Image (cartoon, rainbow, N blue to C red; front, side, top):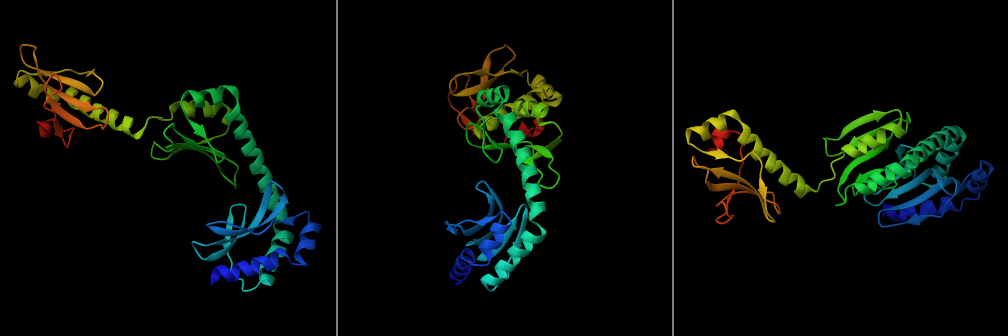
Length: 282
């Protein structure tokens, strides 16, 4: 019911004999009414590439919104005349501020894009297998979001956000000098690669723990502090007092799971919980 009502109101608005000349007088125009799977859109444009305001009916929310720059107002209008009144008010009192904000943001976006497209930065992005989309979202080669370049619509400030570091955000004054070191530090590993690395780190922390080393010594045992590797696993070998390998702690490359195996990799027994408390581990 709402969709049919608001579609009719927006169609009437798009053909208004008073609104169209009013917008033209202010160097603006209405777009065609567009409908997609999610919404109805009627945009007010300053030029082909610049929408300064819009009515959007959300099919999900079943509500009509008037949107401009970073503002979003829920409309309670009951007629196309009320919708037109809000546009008239916007153009008369808020248009110039909106245009200024849009143009300043466009300049900032162009500045950021120029840095991204520069020879050195684009080469670094390619080298690390990353991609940066039109919204400055940074993805790894696996398609995972690992970072973002955010522009504050009010202040025009730029923030570099590391999504793999608890959404660490760094505000920068010079994107030219800040972007390269930021991109270099981004973690481009896949989720599996991180899982395997975490498992290895956990084992190595246990091995190097003084309490664990004492327990090994009391049992006349030792464990290699760095792994040997084959096509399937990383192995931390366990040695007896004679220096003979008697078993191995193995990390599976394909899953990140930790096993106890024979030195040759056979008879693998999964360790479902790897504690970094050495006494609990033993």
